[in-house]
Image (cartoon, rainbow, N blue to C red; front, side):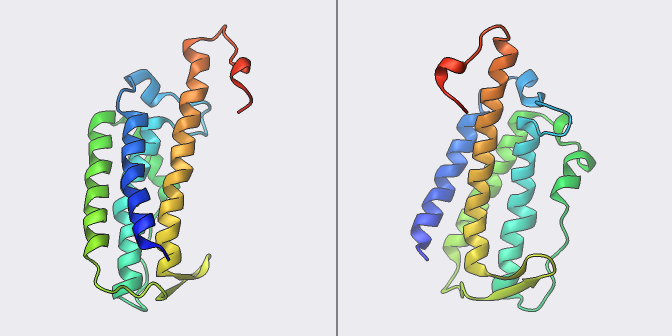
Amino acid sequence: MNLDYILERMADNAATVESLARSVGEEQARWKPSPTEWSILEVINHLYDEEREDFRTRLDYTLHRPGQPWPPIDPEGWVVARSYNSRELQPSLDNFLAERRRSMAWLRSLQAPNWSATYTHPRAGAITAGALLASWLAHDFLHIRQLTQLHWQFIGVVAPDCPVTYAGPW
């Protein structure tokens, strides 16, 4: 595993998320393409909670607490239970960025981690620490894609009579 690559991408991804959210106004931050889809604000708060309660915590358990069950999480449920869409964007973004800095410092402080250490998840099966770290990076890209799509879809709100077909297919 190329750890330097993963850490560099994770740091860069934080900057990408920041650039996709920093100048978003309140209307756009809370706007959802449909009732079942997430807003930009919900994505940012999801990333914040995932950073501290999912990936970093679960990687720590896998590396340093073998055999102990991972703490439970409910990412889908948290969106409503934690009222993500009623929060303010700037503090939410700042929270995510601060947690990512903590994660990066923690990851860089690890001394000879055993990336082959394995946790057996009740639904996902056996997952190594390395696969969990790679999944953390992949999770970033899934939500960067989602944020980008939300921006693309919002064009229909700000320019409803202006089709964007000339741009090319999504």
